[in-house]
Image (cartoon, rainbow, N blue to C red; front, side, top):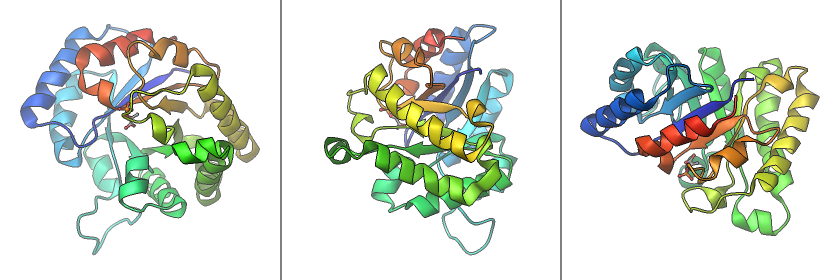
Length: 249
Ligand code: PEP
């Protein structure tokens, strides 16, 4: 399966900075990248980035959140069909920053994944334990609970999602799970997906959490790590390009 390297720009960027970043990425991308590539950008920049990547067929567009509702009186929300209209192929759901700062529950995340799938947008469903949960030996239990909610709500469509294992303690901290630590959790998630669908082998499970140019190759070499969700390093073209280049076929 082709691996996926997805950048999560978070709440960063400007019209000028986005253009400069994407031009630098375009200039450095090999004609035939070995992996699929996506950039998940703040909603106001979807139209701009959609246009900028039109000449970059290897790069797909993604958003960072979506409403669980299709339309209506939900001030401030953005629906999956709107994302689709602006060319989004992916949307991140359940990022730990949204779970932490916006009170998103497992059920809400599952509903968002469902809304995305219904509109033909692939949800990148984030799961991951906090440091306290890891230290209490609860990593497996936490990620399985988070994924179970999405499986429960999405039934047979579950093979259409992308999963991102993002240990909360590794996000933006410079601390990365070792390739072996990450692989253990990815294998747990794969087994859980296998129990839900006979298509589990084609579900991409990304690793996210301080992935960078130096550690990408060893993480991406693990059997069940099918790509990366990249925060900080996706804002620096040379780093993002090195991660793309480090991705095994
Ligand atoms: C993220 O926000 O999804 C992420 C993985 O961030 P970082 O790479 O900066 O840790």
